[in-house]
Length: 461
Image 1 (tube, rainbow, N blue to C red):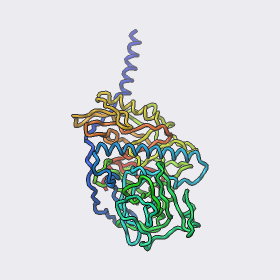
Image 2: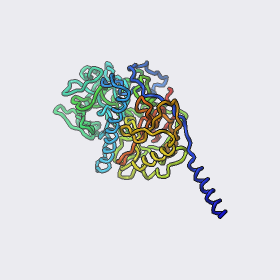
Image 3: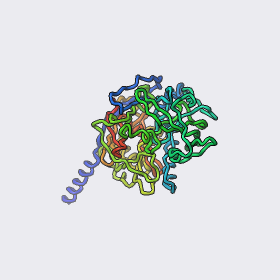
């Protein structure tokens, strides 16, 4: 009897030790009010092979945002975010089931849902005309609206007129550039036509051309882009899109050799702050404290940045049910995990999400639960508090453990103290690391080294 009791106590002690959770402090802040847009002077660099531009949240550019409450803006953002995540998953699945080889321009962009999330101001043409472009790592094609318009949506700046630019040059139908397009055609003047269609039925159609882009201090010539004459759907505000995907027709794919095939961004504030974030191209994109994980290749879809997620820890303990097999990218292009600038909320395959959620709920059992909000099913009432202790959360990538600050996964959803776990499950095979979880890290895309990195507290430049 005594031996049996000792055995029970021994295993109970081991069990408690294994599940003694680690916590960190969450400082509570309400959803911020939308601030007015201010464009600070451009950063300069002594290195001609480095350039940087500011990023702002797309809500600052949308007229519908001006009179909206923070609560309404955030709810709208989650709605469009759900559309984008579903579209990315459908694109991944359709590519896996296709026998084609080139999918570099079969893109799904958050721009059509207003959720490209971050935009910058870039000059185009000679003389330079500055316009706002949404930046998107989930897209390859660079395009802007152009005159004459068969149909153009409302944008903040005058529509670009290629006839007034001395550096504008149409691409001919027999050009290798034209043949790289997934959806291309030819008009009666032997000019190459492009078309990009989006998951909600929006599309852009026009002439594929080359032009000079100006980043204040740096000029990049002969960038191929879509000069859109018919742009229909839910686009608004920005003049077009700067594709930052992994494909050959994206901006990094075209200009990467000039900047060492490296770029990085840091998203300093996720909810419409007027304080800018930055994207940097060149050797300065990499900071000393960056930890890296290898980039994976999807043989059916070269646009997305795939990484290997091997597990997730909650409260200092790896969640047993979250295994590498849940996130495996197979040889047919199914599944996998991508890092995406245009998706807000991280999506995990449903079994993985449920395991993480349940582990978090167990660790946060002393916090008062609150009703679900939009796509979030794990929410808490923290009203009247200035701080709260929450279980730590770590994403384990191959070769890189990324410990998230509490504010990157416990997010305010209203002004009344309701906070929710900022993850969601997906029934599709594709998992997505969203920009809320990337906030405050410098996310490094080292294409030369075929690796992706995270630098904590890397937003200073």
